[in-house]
Image 1 (cartoon, chains in turn blue, yellow):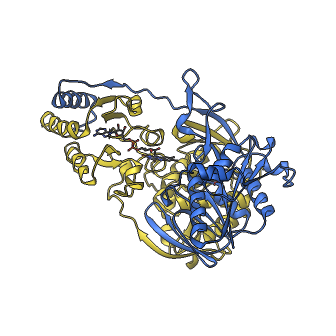
Image 2: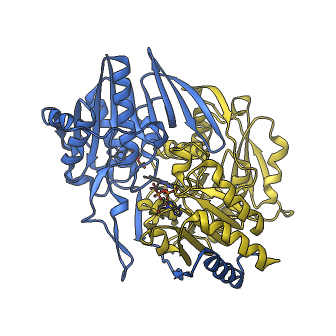
Image 3: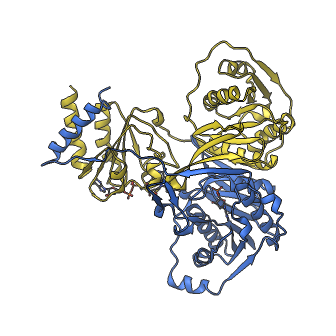
Length: 262
Length: 321
Ligand SMILES: Cc1cc2nc3c(=O)[nH]c(=O)nc-3n(C[C@H](O)[C@H](O)[C@H](O)COP(=O)(O)OP(=O)(O)OC[C@H]3O[C@@H](n4cnc5c(N)ncnc54)[C@H](O)[C@@H]3O)c2cc1C
Ligand SMILES: Nc1ncnc2c1ncn2[C@@H]1O[C@H](COP(=O)(O)O)[C@@H](O)[C@H]1O
């Protein structure tokens, strides 16, 4: 029996973010949330491993200061057997260092496991640090940026995407893997799966349940400002009777701008 | 905290090291401290002195067969040993995939913060490092500073230009450090077919998205590229879903800053736009008048790329000659 823990972040759906044009501030409070994309790939991969080897448990683990039940239910519908939710208002300002620490404590409490799967980076913060930090805290072999994964007995073989190469790496389990979106196409849960999920367990823990030391979740970085970039584009639409005419006008404009024929 | 001193630079990629040295030099001068490069590898002694020409005061040279190729635990232990001993104030690490993971693990071992992918970097009035990075999928730029030391930031390739080499004084200090054994084993490396020219350096880029029906139709873009001395790029789905190419432009791919970027059959989803924002002029060709790409374009054409592109190639051919 293998146990796979998938670290699943509830992220801001960045495609639905609105910007206040006057202040260039993002309106994040009311923005919809969803399972961070890469984490959905990680979950899908865990479920596929279970389907392949026949017997395995897939647990998801989420840390958040706010409610995340909808996201956890979706994860259960996709195929997780059980969801762990570490929920505490004191996590409001945690950074990657604090998040990794809480995840590590939760994983220690869950106990035995063979694999921890993370996304390569999260949809909203896109920092790509938590998986590597977590591997370090749990003292696990780490294979990051994985596009293909196979589990054999007590080893994992994974293909990583680097800037200039694909690298195949082997490690003994337990190990920590971070996945890219290339790895699979996550399934969309059917109504049946959604109904079945309502019977599965969500275990909720607070900071106290994990003996979290507040000192250790203090942020080590400080976000000074977050502003939408200024976009000062001309937004000139070029129209004409036919393609040739449009093309002539566009060509002329580009030459006048001095951006072609240099 | 005050015992931490100096600015350090490390990347397993030589070019990226040189690029970071420019920024490192600037920050070290502002803080009136020294700039150090950590140079690790095997049989690299001769190259170490060269770094001084690029602005370094001090090179920590670690030459060891275990460092022949990049191996995470080996490199991590070297950096950890040095940083724990000599306590730098700032550590800039090249933001390759390996470098970023290394930075995260090093920050964890040292119990400090890490700000990844800083395309902008400076120090504030208190002398703290401030990094600028794209966040929220490209919707915003965040300015982030540190509450702990060393302050670790990772720097993407081509964010900064390297300095011209010049004759300067500096020292190379060879160190012997304890190197950890690996926890993983590399069994195969398959080099990727990457473009011979770096797209980041292209002056004109013509990119296609899912509006392109067949891989072969890329020829339409190549025809135009020939006329304007451009480079052809693409959005991520053409690489990831359709597997036609291996690289893409955007937040998770290449961030480009050409003089001219022409987006053909690309909708303009935020993650793509995040990679082209620094272009001087953006042209969008899309058959959907509602496509968001028009919001970030200087010139927009609502039309079929299969008609507009050949016509544009023809028009430029005529008008430029
Ligand atoms: C974390 C994360 C990171 C990502 N990173 C990147 C990244 O780095 N780069 C990237 O590109 N994407 C990235 N994506 C994906 C991104 O969200 C979009 O899915 C992608 O950019 C869309 O590609 P597209 O515009 O080619 O396709 P689509 O959105 O499908 O757009 C195709 C467009 O072509 C137009 N079209 C169709 N036929 C024609 C025709 N004949 N003539 C003219 N126009 C036509 C359509 O109107 C449509 O607007 C990322 C996503 C996530 C979640
Ligand atoms: N709050 C969280 N709860 C659970 N997993 C998380 C959380 N934050 C980050 N992760 C995991 O760490 C990965 C990288 O996150 P990040 O470093 O924020 O980009 C994500 O894809 C998740 O797998």
